[in-house]
Length: 284
Image (cartoon, rainbow, N blue to C red; front, side, top):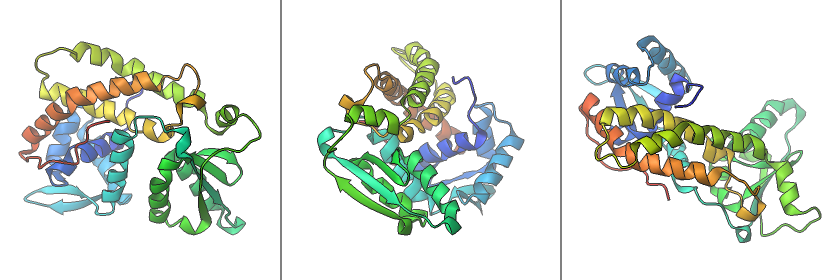
């Protein structure tokens, strides 16, 4: 597992995103505390994290025989966007696909919006080419539009699609200035170091115990789900020669295939609920 344990709220976010959505979107606080105990998170820490998620508008309290929490309706598009990025954005873009360029100008009196725009575009995987100018592979345009509209920031941004780079610096050199490759590689390396041994131990086992699957899968997915946002999937010719994302993605794909379903079976056992199908995703 990762050297620095994920925050309880991040683990709960993963549990809701990967499992609770498949069980109707609601879970009792007692069952959630039981699940989180398997991740070494005690009851008071769970309640504190739930309070923060409730205050942030992620969860709503609802009684169904007992006290529990369901996902707020507004979180549906957020988790759907996460599914696309986490499970379907594993391959690099093609140079021929072009670029989406975001240009924004925010009045000084509203500089808080400027900071939010920078942080959210960076979170989406955009690189900063110049003050107020950000770009990413063109396939991120739909995600960018949805995010900016959801956050009420679209009025400050102009989005353009550009087919190709026209000069003057070598594009590969420029891209290395626009994205922090060493920081992205460091996170891929941390993921690979933490989870490759787990994949090696599980590989070939005839049966994976559901509780053990849950204990590994939730922190693994929690650590991984940030990476598809940091890394926009730049075209391969623009990446460093020793780019380590491919190896890390292979570890994620293998562990997802091994652990997701038995982990779900454990959650079903604890909650007494049954999954009805999607949103479980297969990486591709």
